[in-house]
Length: 83
Image (tube, rainbow, N blue to C red; front, side, top):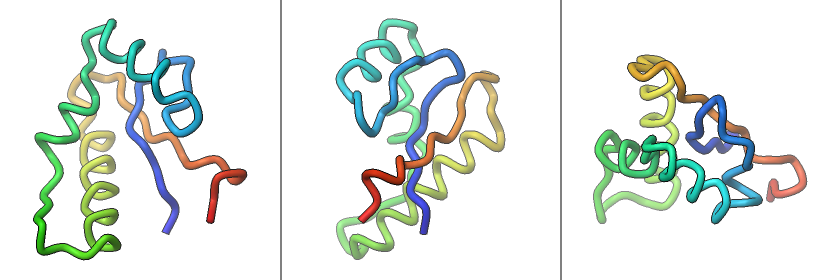
């Protein structure tokens, strides 16, 4: 399964490799993408790590598909970080 993170079209930082900068930019522009993701993702303490990762991936896909704000994108995990 390819891993993604939620971002916006104008954020110059990669959330995988420059998370602090990415988050500061995201919040300073009022996107609050992590909070949006937290509101959409359906998770539980009973889920395995694999199932929880899939739930997060599903929520990111839903946000990008609906793209109510018109700015959200999926950023793939860089190959250099793939396990």
